[in-house]
Amino acid sequence: LFLTTQIVTNVVIDPNTDSLLRINFNITVLDMPCEFATIDVIDVLGTRNDNVTKNVNKWQVDEFGIRRGYEGRNFEQKDILHDIHHDVDSLVANGIHVLPIDDGNFKFFVENHDYVFVDFYAPWCIWCQRLEPVWEAFAERVETDQLPVSIVNVDCVANKDLCSREKIMAFPTLRLFKKGVSQPPDYRSDRTVDALTEFIKSRLALDEQLERLDPQAKALHKERLINERKDHPGCLLAGFLLVNRVPGNFHIEARSRHHNINSIEANLSHVVNHFSFGPVLSKNIMRRIDDLPDQFFDFTSTQPMDNKYFVNEKLHQAYHHYIKVVSTHLDLGGRYRGKDAILAYQMVQQSQVMQYVEEDVPEARFTYDLSPMSVVISRKGKHW
Image 1: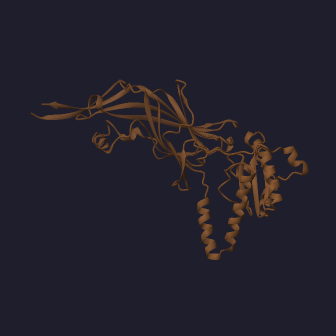
Image 2 (image 1 turned 30 degrees about the vertical axis):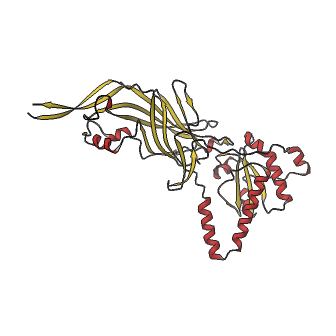
């Protein structure tokens, strides 16, 4: 009596009765800070989960895509205090203290002043409107305290090219320059006169201490500060989503609780380090799957987007991904048979670049659709 095995493939109506589907992902957004990068989910049932936080984590990455600092969970943005007791009309009664500069004199101005603190704003931005009297009161405080800092602002609607060169992604952006060179990171703390003044005084004091060091110590200290302050805008988003088992999409976009996003500068270029559906398979299960001939099941079909780059060539574009998902039941015998068969999800994917109108913030979208059919791959023995 001899026994041979053969592999049989059948297509059946999907027997899965789970109400939720797991989406696993690890995606690096190349040119958007974690401060603004968020993930939202929506499906055909009308279920919308904005700012999913539970199982999504974010890390700042450097220019080589290497993780730097942990930035928290998705859309975990700290509260910012705002002064609300300043009135612009009364503040300017004794003269305007904030100097407006533009594309014509920006470079000359910042290069010919030791310190320049710039508010890049848009007149329509509600957060900029809220900051305006605070910024004016802050400028007056700087003059009163005789601090060697010029407080200025730039209208990014009137100076689009300048703000594009400066990569202003959100309004307001508060950026300090020293002798023409920006001093990262941008200011992101409380928008109060006291907080802004304390920030300037601490930076001035630190620079003053540096100047007292001997040349070798000064060089080492400056190098350490540069590395600490590096503000590369890349962000790695990793984790998983539990979504309704119906067609839907999740998307990455720029959003902030304390800014208005500059939609023209929102760059959603990204790398899909990993993208898959379903439970994470153990090493033991992976070994069992590897025994299957590729013509019946190739594991790469469960993650065809892995390690692919999707880079936008122009502003105001974003990639949209369309994914057809097919559940696959691997009935390999032993403990992996019947209702305990290994469940994997194969997918077919295509991507295209979408152009957005100027007012809309682009989003990197992953639209998924589950096939009502399922593939069953089983290993059967035959006596002869």
